[in-house]
Image (cartoon, rainbow, N blue to C red; front, top):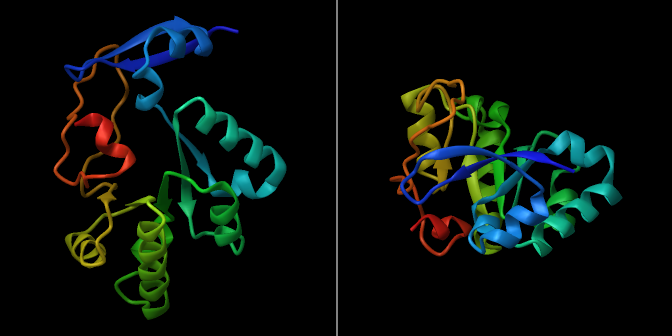
Length: 178
């Protein structure tokens, strides 16, 4: 089947192209290393066997996996253990309650420490204040995302992307941007 694929060129320009995913990967060895498939934790919880199969296919293709809204449900660590994602994006509610809630702070600290030991990149979602950013950075999170950093923008045909972000940590799946 044909798919719409946004390709990031070495100069940072994003172009839209229509192709089959297999053709796309076969045409460019680096193409698979530019793809991160992000799936919401809630969706992964609802179909465990399907999630394992999907993550296996993505990894065999040489692409990367990410779980968004991680830490939202009681099954978070089971999903993490079974799927072994390359990235996790912390649930915004954890990051936003971080300033006042000691339990959230300890939970986030534990997630970051375990993830780093396993080679997983941790991204904090929903960062809206400078204080939230300072608190989360003190725990050595790898990246932050939220209204404090940038407002959502409509994707256009050509978008410039910073391929050398200041938050980039070496020896991670992000290294392919270097």
